[in-house]
Image (tube, rainbow, N blue to C red; front, side, top):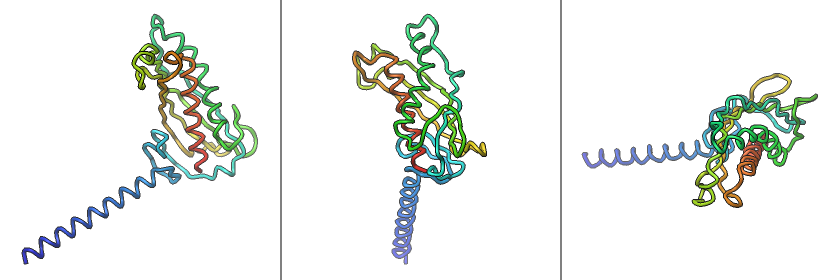
Length: 204
């Protein structure tokens, strides 16, 4: 009797383990490129966090507009720091580079403002603009002293003003000629985030 009970307990544990593993695999599959409502970390292996509030059909929209790009809250280095001017100049270069990356990958016309017809609106906020260290990039390599950009944003339906998706993404670039100039790496990193957001839109 005791042996039968022990065997049943083992079988039960195996079954529970298999069920847990199956659910974990299912959850993992759901996170990869998911377009159903929910909050996903490392969405599709590309974006740090995506919250889908309402699903939509991207093919029914004719254009994408980057309506606002807030840089007001980004902390700057001290004016005495040798990276201060590079970061200050980057504040004006990040949005065009972001839009360039978005335009390269998105399957819709890109504009600065919502126009007529069906338009998806992106509102973005820059939260980090870290210049890293050009010297560390040059001498240490392997990602040391990387430039980092982080932004968060939301995607809305222009006509209803409803928020469809929220996202948060950080990218870093640590390689370039002679360690990579600040402007070069800031633009490259912002462009990559634009491509990431385009990939998010293209999934719907």
